[in-house]
Image (cartoon, rainbow, N blue to C red):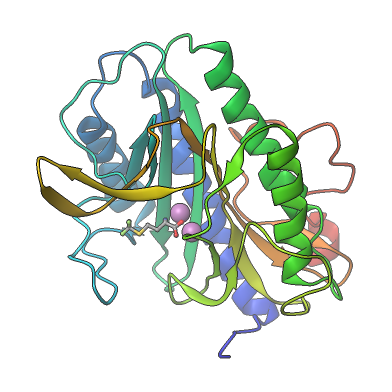
Length: 283
Ligand code: MF3
Ligand code: CO
Ligand code: CO
């Protein structure tokens, strides 16, 4: 119900937040190698955000109703972990896949939220395929974004593409509006029917962040020896899971991806629209 429509000034703030969030991932890219721990990655990201960027990691002590305060400055979800993995002291090993999810808050209070998949060392063909096609699935949703389209169009495009590849879409977690608050309305489902749900209007900003499983879509809390950390979600069948996330603005003519930076991966070949509004049009 309370969805915020961003003004031109708000959008400038969100552009800064989005770029900074993406630049944290750029910084981390060369570090993600066999032997590194996700705790070390978290520490380096934290230092960069706080000391270099002057941003605040939005996840640190984040405590939505029913959750314990999140204890780290990023989420690191490895292999069959779907999302919200808490950094730990276990070294990454050759062939692991890991999602790193970064959300920064700028001094003005704007949030930028994005995540990428990384393949540690070489990676199996199956793991590489899952990561790459999940990236494409996110973009299948992004290219649907324009005024007059509906949220169901985004979810449908992602679901159809993922299921065509033999993968499944996680239902319990979704994208979200974002701005001065980390999670705002609307909820952005990654499955659905075309022509349904909220109509998109210029100035809306939300994330698209599909979680795609190589096996079945069912998930569960990660209960290790009976205890639960309160956050980590895994696939019930222990199949691999991948996720990518961008923060996206609805423009007058389509979309602008706010979480792009020098190190962002190339866009899929099917993306023919410009991902960013030309600077001349936005000055
Ligand atoms: N960044 C995640 C998202 O995309 C949320 C992480 S909340 C945390 O919405 F507490 F788990 F970090
Ligand atoms: Co998000
Ligand atoms: Co995120």
